[in-house]
Image (tube, rainbow, N blue to C red; front, side, top):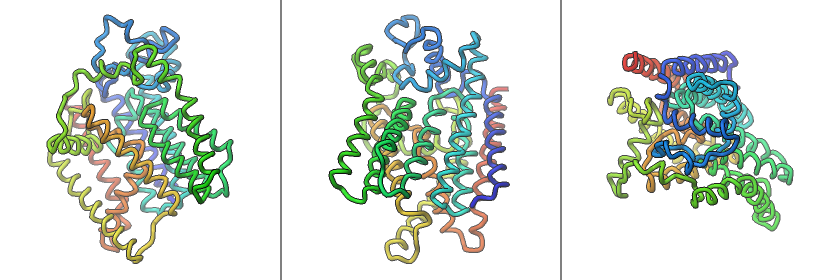
Length: 404
């Protein structure tokens, strides 16, 4: 179990740093904030989904109209009381912080039901609360603010059903609804589809006619819930993805090869940890990322030793097997989607992995824990918390010096 004092501390630190960065980052300098706000404003003003074909005076490069509409519809409702863009932006930044609270809560609930060891639970919650890029991502205007808590809620619900003998059709309907809402917040919600099908398999315990019927039921109703969005895109833009080509027209086109793989890995790693600015161009000194890379290598090596010991049965899983399978399936799918997207568009952004932040932080902390000498292992969560706090303070000073 997690000490409630530590939980409250992480909660307060998470809120405080998000409020600091929400105040410190000048209006419209968060990542893609102008385009995100413009989408919501069109819905509010026109009482319908945007049609980019009508906006002749807008620069469509970098537009967000290809994004699913759930976040922007919620944002349009929240900003309906104000006509001032700055006020709207400030309100939506507060909304992002509120949505982060749901992500934190359902991460905590998930760690509780899978009986995560204390060191792992504290370390995972530390990442959810204090990872620098995620702090900014959940304190500025972006649809990531909604998709991450929805993914956490869905994962929690999938895992919470595992103790039952069979999955019911009412549960499958809820699976479909939660999956669809997450996809309608952002397309990386698709990571939940394989996770849900694996959940059905684990509950059925075999591949039989019932497994196929229930899987089909889940996929069918998920498709029904989101079909209208792709139909709208096709009828409006003659493209199922909406005006994505106009949005990405100015992006770098890098041919696939060793150099592109290196750029994807480097960019994803750096922006996962610490990145600020409209295009993630504001970074900490190179030495910081080199140290983070060395620590990450240590974690990977620790996990390698862990897997080696698992195979020869010299150790046991820290968590229950079934939840681990569901979490890993979601993480693997998330990684595959990131790779496919970068091969086509080249946007090596670590935030695309944030729907799998529970898994990444748990794996990271396990590796460090196992590589640390026995007597010092209890200090691994403290090391992570202090390290993340240092990065955030450094980041706040960097932005303060840059903007003020």
